[in-house]
Image (cartoon, rainbow, N blue to C red; front, side):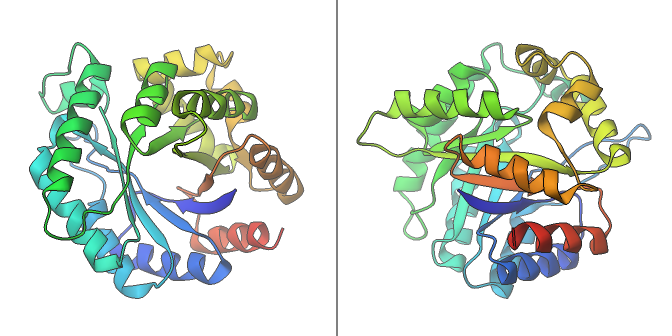
Length: 284
């Protein structure tokens, strides 16, 4: 299992510094979710991951940079393929693209219709995106992964994409999900499995869990794992940065599930604390 880093809502210069640090410590991947949240005052939050990754690729040589995930309901596939191909060309093949349907609540906030069948929508986007990827004159070697929660979307990512980007999973559910991917692909085809695992303190982890639990698809995702409230979500799927021994043990447990990449999601931590955690885990 390779180790990566995931972070969101940071200025480009901060992400570039983090990328250099992660690459120097031996991390293999940097994942940047697509933002675009709107706060209670109507202000737009987040950073553009495509722009940020362009700067990251200029500052690194081995790190794989990924958008995880681009929100399909706000995208047009020819333009998405063009941006992805540009980054694949710039990086020499170090770019991965994740795509997912987004969330009903976010769609309502932007007054964008949410599809009646997210599964059918993602499948259509995958087919269209792969068609445009094949017609690019450059940079058409990037893999396309699906942001997936339920088993049907996981299977779609395995059979029609190049893998899946997973989020908020217990080790037991991660193992079941990896088995689902392997069963869908069979012995002769490889699909990548990437999981975000949040690392932090109760002060940083609980608000994130609360926010996600307020979205219908994630609430269902948590309940399916027996995680009935935000405290259970944090206890079952997150790592306490104050106990590095437990962090290392949990990472080893996730490695046993067969995951390909485990991304430490260090959102909300101060730079010195991020450095402490990433350095300690890299040397585990």
